Image 1 (cartoon, helix red, strand yellow):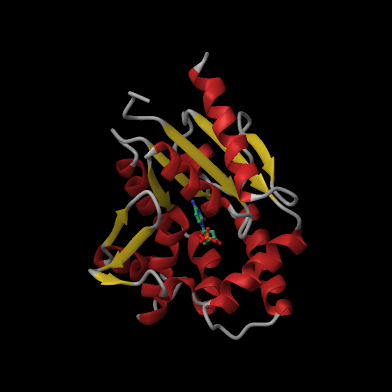
Image 2: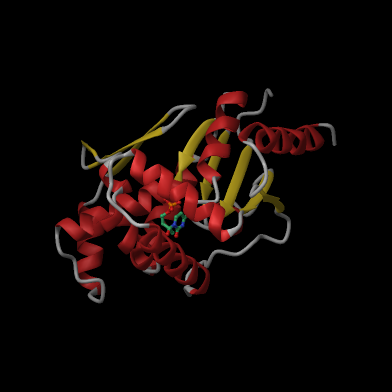
Length: 226
Ligand code: DC
């Protein structure tokens, strides 16, 4: 593809396998992959470490001014630096997962993240996954995919991911965390998670990774042949 501004937006609930598809797609097409959730997680980690009061707008704005997030994008993963410290692993821990949705409801946080995401997407072929990529960050994205999967499949995936990293969690904790985050993500005032009108739904409960990739590649072929 000769273009240098082709944007694929992949949105959906937590643990629907968005990043897996997004990474595979970026690798296949040699696009840059950006995990926008990692940015909200890095902000959350900073707020937790510095005990920022989420009700205090002044503290939040001061904290945001102190936060510098760098994404070292590649076709396979995004390394994330918080003020030059590699926090790629720490942002996946349960404490961050339990607080990130609340932090993501804060308007000032979203404004700062969206601006940075839009900069990352200019003059680049990019695959970005998140919650509001097709609706707010890139409303004119070339392809919008909205991913879903059944709640039990999502919980099993998250459980496997965390236990593989040695975290001690129960299935119950995971289910609670997922449904709590779904609720906050889809009911918040600022750009809630919703399917963009022109998004294509991909329910991957029963699909292998190869099948999902094939599905998305087929959508891209359709766009290219128009
Ligand atoms: O994709 P994830 O589970 O790592 O995202 C973590 C949280 O960040 C998620 O609960 C909601 C928030 N998020 C968001 O509000 N907007 C995005 N574009 C990406 C993530």
